[in-house]
Structures are given as structure tokens and as C-alpha cells.
Image 1 (cartoon, one colour):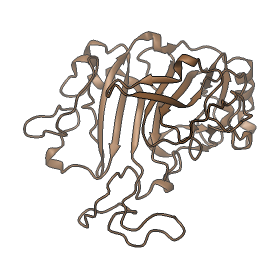
Image 2 (cartoon, one colour):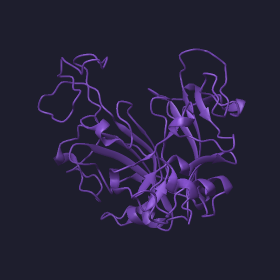
Image 3 (cartoon, helix red, strand yellow):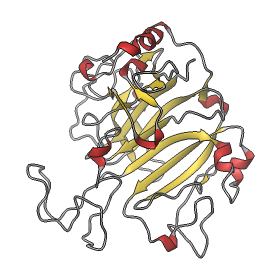
Length: 332
């Protein structure tokens, strides 16, 4: 079967260091810019919804070139499709570049149950680590989810991680994820690069007495609304749309608040357990009360129902992806 495709186009708005107007090609050939020539001119600027400020486009990818590949040896200027098993979150799939390509103006990621190496499933994970990074701005992504609305079993996600760590490489995140803390507090443990240290790792280029970490921002994690509706406090939006897929947006950060301030998983904040004050949500979103974080970190999240139009019905892969899926068992 095909569990996909998941389809993407992506734009990043911010403040570029130079005023260069050069454009990148939409193939693996690269001229030094991160703006795709296929991006419409009217999308070169946008206005922030929160601050009303003007933002200029600094990176875009329309994926118009057919059949692009993203393995390490393909040397794509923005993306790398990893070749490894991701042991986090109980992942059952082996991530292989063979499951990632471009077709009909979209990046497509396929999932199959044909298995790969010791894993039952084969799928793909594409990242911009050490290629396209940001310190602030606006991220705009067009996406299509796999399968039917509300279907369980897959966990498509679009997310960002601090660049000191790398997704799917858990050891690179030990003592860093998801810290975002710049003060020295010796009562807090676990942060390897804390503001209490006068001796950062030799050759790292890091300043002494500067806290560093790997916070996580999840633009989208998709799961059945029925899962969220099962929370003890019965979230109204999820209950009303329990036949759909819900998107979840989260900010995961450490250190965590004291336990007395955190609501129980599945319950809403209250006067007794107030959580973070002054959180605001969109008109069609509610706080994600299903999960507030782990032992050493907090997860601040909101969920929102997605209409069926966000899904691509299951179908057979196009010829290029089908050949890649068939070859996945022999891919090194």
C-alpha cells in the first residue's frame, strides 16, 4: 500500500544579510541563493499577522523540478533526506531517501509496509540541518496529508529544531534538547551548555557563561481528532470534529515550570494549576490539553481541526516513486 504522499512547498520570510536579488534554480544545481526562481513575484514580501511588519522572502522551494533526489550524495543546497532509523517516539519506519522525491510541483514523502532493513515500514524524513537556518521571521508551508481524514497509524509532522542538535540523531541532543535558558541557576540540572559554565567544549566557538540549547517548534503534528477528544476534559473542538484529523502546533522548552503549576495531562488549566499565563489561541483552535510535556520540559501546544481538503487520498506511487520503493530494500 502507499501511506502517502505527503506533499510540501515551503517559504521562509525574514531579514536577509544582503540585498542580493539573485535567484536559485529549483533543481539540485545552485547559484548561492535560497530563493526559488519559480516562486511568484508577489510572494517576495509579506506582512506579519501579529505585528503588521513587512517581511522579505529569504528562502523558498516550490519543488517544480521533476524527480529531484535528496540523499547526502545528491548535495541538494537546502534539503537532506536522512538514511537511518529514527529511534525516538517509537517510530516503526526506517527513513530512507528512496521514499522522497518531487512530482507535479510538490515534495512527496511515501510510506510503505514493504519493510526496510529491520523495520516493518519504509518512509522518509527531510531536513535542512546546517543548510537553511533562521533566527526569527515567518515560516509559510503548503502541505497535503496522507490517507483519509481521521485515519490513525501515521504521524506526519513539519517541525524545527535548534541547530546544535540534529533530528533523528538522539545523542546529538543529550543535555541540549529542548533547553532555552540563558541564566545561571545551579539548582537546575541537565543543561550541558549552561550559563554557569566558564569552560565550553574546546574548539566549539561558544562563549563562556552563555546558556545554549535545542528548543523545538512543531509547526504541525497531525493526529486523529478522536485521540484529542478522548482527553478527560473533553475538548469541545475535538469532540465536534472527531471524524477529522487535527493539527497540533507546539513549543517544547526546558527547564519546565514547577509541577504545581502544570495541569494534569488531559485536563485544562485552572486557578489551582494555572500553567502559562496569557496564552492566546486562534478562533478555531484550543489548548492541547492531552500532553503538557515530560519530566524536564514543557510542551505549550494548541490543536485545530483540519478539513478533508488537507488530505491526499491513498493512491499508487507515480512511476519514479514506485521504482524507488521497489529498490528500497537494496539501498545502502
